[in-house]
Length: 186
Ligand code: NI
Image 1 (cartoon, helix red, strand yellow):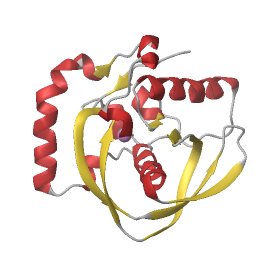
Image 2 (cartoon, rainbow, N blue to C red):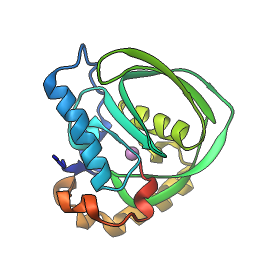
Image 3 (tube, rainbow, N blue to C red):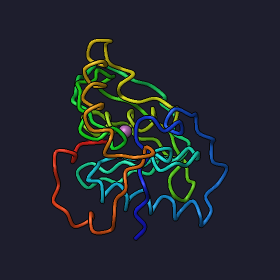
Image 4 (cartoon, rainbow, N blue to C red):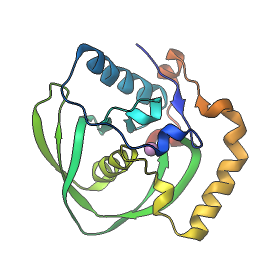
């Protein structure tokens, strides 16, 4: 397994747009595998390439055993409204309620670069939207009201010193650690 370093809030890579992928290569397949290993080590349910310092338009999600690889994803349509507490592997220990569309229809390519569509609501629907945001330099904080955003940032101020150079180091040993509240971080 290759557990990668997660970049945290403050690293400019999290605010950059990604570059669409023109095809899968062995190197990019390895990136997808590494994203899963890293997400598992961090006890998350979603992870996007910029969170490990990469610019490719690739993200993953895994909710209740359902694994989704998103290459060049696009939201085709969205419906309804839902409010759900979100966290982010790049903003550890900070959680806030985020309002988003309840269901989305997403078009993407899979790890074999085959096109597919997926319609999702509930936690997976939230997760897909959160990861697609990451691919465009957007974080869940950006969806919050000014007041809630300030509160979230003051929580972040309490913990950010734990991540020098905006890096969150994980090890393969973290793969065996017990899940925590971060279980639902994306
Ligand atoms: Ni996130």
